[in-house]
Image 1: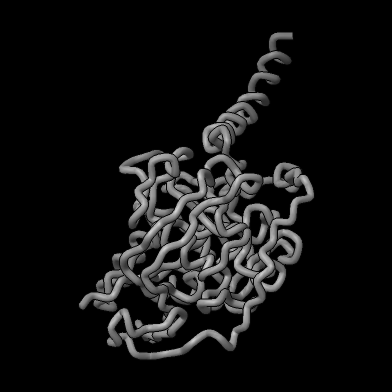
Image 2: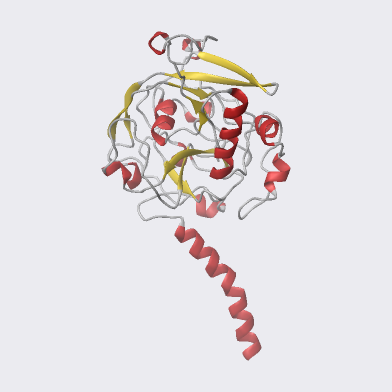
Length: 320
């Protein structure tokens, strides 16, 4: 009898620890953290039938292209293109001009941490990478393959798409900051992760709906991904020429996460709380339902953790 009880206790301990971990990264009033590669059952959500998609049609021909980084900020148009070659690898950036937008979700849409919806002004324009950082980019800077990084994954080590043009994943927030620091030294640019406000502003690209266009045309998510990542630039970009802002992989942001931050967030150039336990992730991924891929959807993850659905993109602010 004693042996049976001991065996039952030993079997229950891992389950209890996992349950505690899930609770720890799921604040009340927030969607279950999609930074975990949860089971299909856990990923299901309940919708009340409200239309979640924006009605804007994106015309790719409206995206303007320029290779001139030296053009003064006021002379650039949203979506202008700049290509830098670093270590033999091309990095294409799109110009996101200074401006203002409504950040967060209106009443009747989204989760508590996306409210209140509020007006934000970004006083500086920036160049944002038009895709997620790819596996080719990562390996050229860090000297590590996706297979090597997968072995360091949190909770899971399975691969979810490999190839030079696939997004890099299994990268922690700390890994991404290190990548930005190394790329800054090699390029002479001040490369960094986007703030949460910069990310949402660039994702929306002037739109105001739940998505920056039609989700099925713009993003890889649970319904169309085949349960894996896909090469970047295989879906339509938003109005500023940015690809995969909805789906494919979550993207780390610079900010600490705080469920109630929007109640006290500055209206000009917000940079997130001064401290915290988790970092912000945006955009949703290949394993998430459409709800998590909305422009305003926020998530969080431990900065030392890495997953097969979480990557990043970067930006730099021109210096004059």
